[in-house]
Image (cartoon, rainbow, N blue to C red; front, side, top):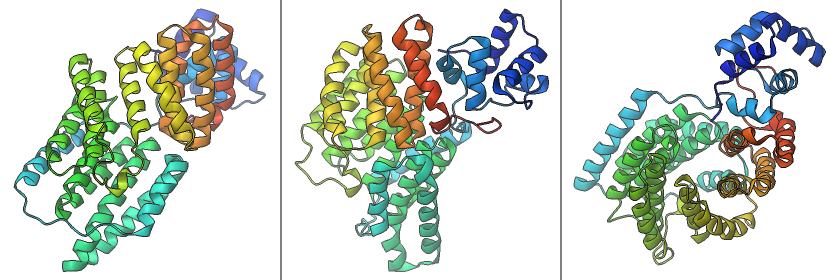
Length: 411
């Protein structure tokens, strides 16, 4: 994996024999501007500021580095998750599990709010960078109505508000705001608990597990297991299969291959029952192709690319027909990683190029991160022409990728 961007710039500058003043002068000459000074270079190297997309491109030229290597070394655009917030959420999950076991609260009425279904369908086509503000505003409006309601009116509004919290969290995560997503999931879990909707609470925990998967895999596994235990009696086959996949992926990222394999077996058995019972409206997107792609993704994390590729190939054709650019971009990124895992570098580059284009179309930070990670894995193989071509493509697309110009940079 790449070094931090500031250290990479500093080490390469010294190796080239440049001072900070000289590097600033070369950057200004290349870009035809005088806006970069020695002090700005110093701030980049100390990590106090991050160069924007255009300055990353000029740095690659002046320092003779692969553009993809600089892009991959830049800090991710998402905001860090507070450690105490994660711990509090895990404690709330344990409380949810206890209360669902002893609760006698009757479920609230089904959600029929048209704006909830509208936002779900929009999420299929619009990435979090564009949709998150809309979903957040709808959620806050629902919370305001809920505060004013009493009795039966409040019970009627609980479930739509919980569903909007889930959508607000999901789109915030897709926009790179992990802390905001965790807050929305926590609020939604409390609303689902008050509404007596155990499956929706389990889904919110599963979403939080997905959010924490890369940064806190053990906490992600814990949340998925708590959710699975809570919905064992009331959850549909699709929901239980989804939660089994969440737990398997978190275990794989923790390096626990045995537990991950067991989770995949459970998910497979439950997935075979998909369609035998009605699924919640918020699981409309879950089908056999999606479950197959999830299995392939987990196998890539487990370093089993030969087993993963057939699954990702078959599922990819079905998912492509949906016309959802984010889904295509995400799973194309996993397929590229699987191809790289078996040494097919040129094919990985071809698939990765398509994934980068779909990431731009999707407006999804999560999809863009697939491109960033692939870039980091390919950067050491710059001697291969396909890698250089992909690096150039990513350089051209960088300014369009969501989150590619963090605050403090120049785009």
